[in-house]
Structures are given as structure tokens and as C-alpha cells.
Length: 436
Ligand SMILES: Cc1ncc(COP(=O)(O)O)c(C=O)c1O
Image 1 (tube, helix red, strand yellow):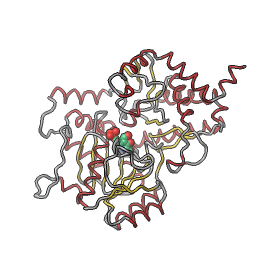
Image 2 (cartoon, protein in one colour):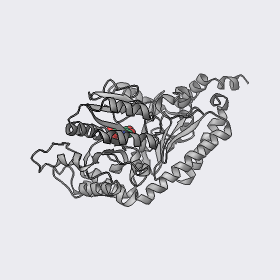
Image 3 (cartoon, helix red, strand yellow):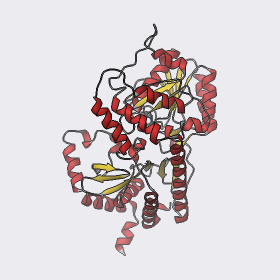
Image 4 (cartoon, helix red, strand yellow):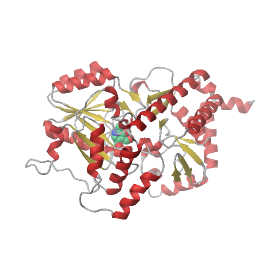
């Protein structure tokens, strides 16, 4: 009886879950401590840290991950959306192996890069011309720099809670390590506020950067009317509208921009586009991108040793051409919608203040019943997030500590059923804690 009562207290429940987690993961704990001798916090990618320490993985196959203590997880994180193809899809592996066998680091153009560019262009009508780089961060840095160079204006506008990369992060305003672009901050889904800021700063504003659905902030979709107003206000003043579709480009054959019927001037890509290898890309209207043509007298140079690395380019082609076809994109998005609805129905049936936000195959668990339209509406619920995360890991399901899930093509019907059952059992166990 005393035990049961203790479990109703959130902090105690979390401590117990952490104790069980630590006992179950001795090798991961040892690795974590050793790693901290040479890396701050044992970490080289902040988002992969969680308390008490993250499990380290030995490998993955399809939708399964195995950690170094021998546990197997069904992977609902999908490498924050870069893992669309699952772990080592044989078609991706074959393309990469062929590229490796043909020789790496060739130091010249190859046959893959233009094919990948033409596949993207065919799917995204807003892309007249595009270029590759190595990460989503780099893509956004290049796109913002392009807009500033070509408009001759200085400022960028971003949204509170927006995430566009390690040096382009705006949790409560620009991060202390952001690239030093003069920045105007606006509030997401606040149409009047954003439009009046655009009007006020029209002479210095080069570009408005926006995620059509905020990923890092918690799977928060933009209202179509909000994005349309941004489109109209930027077009009126010759300001570049940049859609960061690093994550959302998977949400229909032509990205969220196609689903919403809005044409940005520039779009950035990354994540899954390289088949699971590192990639970034930026592209859009001819008048902006054509200046990168090195045959022009007034060309702008865009560098990057690995921009066309053969492994990424070859894997990206196979991924987009043969695997993530328009039909596959539509099907995965529909699957994600159904999964989210099922989880929302589960929370309702169990009477807990939880909900799933997101669009299609990108989604986030939230710990409130109240509506969420912008990052400021999201309750942090740090301890609840930690508790659910550890309890789901104990049941063999992996996703981000913040509650972020991205679906891969490797997930099967039983994986989804298993997830719903497991989350249902966690919710049952902690119903009193999760009710309010
Ligand atoms: C919307 C968005 N933009 C940009 C990035 C940065 O991409 P990368 O991690 O490849 O630099 C991310 C990464 O999570 C993202 O979600």
C-alpha cells in the first residue's frame, strides 16, 4: 500500500524509473562516463543527451535498434526524420556500396548529383534551381546568406521557438551561439503581429524563414492563412520567403508547401534526402539561385568539399526515385495521421491530459489537453516527458526525450499496435499523475 502511494508522486515515480533504467543499462552507463573524459557531458550532439544517461547503440536493422546492453527497441525516433528508410535498407546499402567501390572523394562532378537535383525539382514546383551542401543547418545558412546578398538588405525574420540548425536556433529569441544575422523575432501563427513587423521593417528585411510545421518546438503546424499572409506581405515588398522543409518535405510528394498550396521563394532540405547520409540542400526561384552559376561574370561562389559526395548523392537518388515515391509519401503521411488519431483517442479514453501534435509522419506527445498553436502554449512537463520516455524504453520503444516521433518506412503494423498497447499500459500505471 505504501509502495503504491509513493508511485503516485511524479518525482518519486521518475526516480524509480531512473533507478530501474540505470540498473538495466550498465554498459551504456560505463560508456557515458568514459565518453565524458573526452567530450563535454560525453556528448557530441546535445539533443541525444537525456537523464540519467543515454543508451548507446550497437546497431540497427529495419525498424529495430539494439543497444550495447543487448536490449532491442522499435525505433519511433527515426533519427529525427533522417531515418525515413529504416536502418540499412538493402537498396540504399547497395547504392552506397556501389559508390564506395567506384571510388570516394573524386574531386569532380559525378553522375548522381544532377539526377538527385532533377528528382527534387520534379517534385517541388517552387524549385527552379538548387544546390547541395552537408546539413540542414548549412542549407539554411546558405539560403539566408543568398537572400541577404541578392536583396542587399541586412535583416532576417524568424519565429520564437523556431529551429533551423545549431547556429540558427530561436528558443526564446536568437541562441547565444547563433550566426550573427541581425534578426527580427515574430510569434508563430500570429498573423497580424508578423505582418505588421514585416511592414515596419520592410526596408531592411531580406528574408522571412519559417517552418511550415515547427518540428523541434513540438510538431506545431502553421495555419495556412498565416503562411499565406506571410507570402503576400513578403511578395509585396520584395522580401524572400524561405520555407525550411528540412523535416516537412516528406509530408507530401512536394512537401508541406504542396499540401498547403503555397509557393515560397526558397526552400531548404536535409535529413532523409541523402538516404540516411549527411545532406543539406537549398533551392528555389531562378532569380535567386542563378547567381550561383559560375559561368556568369557576376557569379557568387558556393563552396563545400563534400557537397556532391558520391555516397550521399547515389543513396539519395535511390531513395527518392525508387523508395519514397509520391505514392509512398502519401501512404506514410496517411499512416501517420491514423496513428496520431489512434493515440489521441487512447488519451481521451483513459481520461489523461495528453495529446499528439503534428502532421503525417512527424508527431509529438504533449502533456496537456489545452490547445497548442505556438511554442509558448506548450507545457514543458519535463518530468512527465522523462517518465514516459524511460517507461516506453523499458517496454522496448525508442523516441526522443521531448516526445518527438518520426515514422520510418520500415515500421510495420505490429509495431504500431505494440506502441499503442505499451503507451496504454504506461498511462494506466500513472493515470493519477497524468490526469491533470
Ligand atoms: C526544421 C529544421 N531545420 C534545420 C535543421 C538542421 O539540420 P541539420 O541537423 O542537418 O543541420 C533541423 C534539424 O533538426 C530541422 O529540424
